[in-house]
Length: 149
Image 1: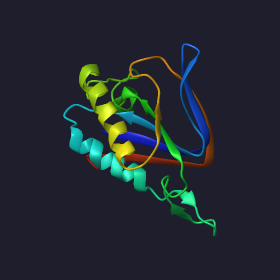
Image 2: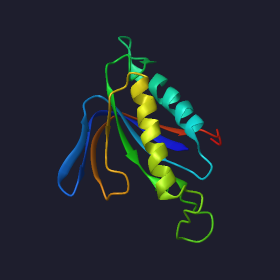
Image 3: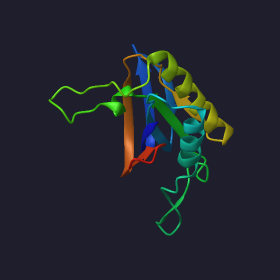
Image 4: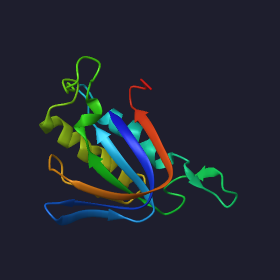
């Protein structure tokens, strides 16, 4: 399971013109589910995301987590995080989990974040989404439950 985590001042997602999720200060989490991922991967990444100390304290140092600032997470499913571009110019997505499996694990990840007291808003799994975000920093962190990077 892979995640791109971005610190934001605010963010929102719409599907066909309908807003499905919005947060103020917090994190946008783009989540890709890979073949062989499980609930254990969800728990690992949820714990990591909830505890990431990437918000500034009173001294301007990145010492606070999203929980510490009372922020939320806007979670967006994104199978393209498993795009393999090493061969040719067209990405291969063979390492991404099938949609039925990925949808369940995406929901499990969101549930795991909520269990860690992080308010979660989402897009709509499998839909074409429009995401608007105001990045803060910018701060972007890459996470992988298999620790490949």
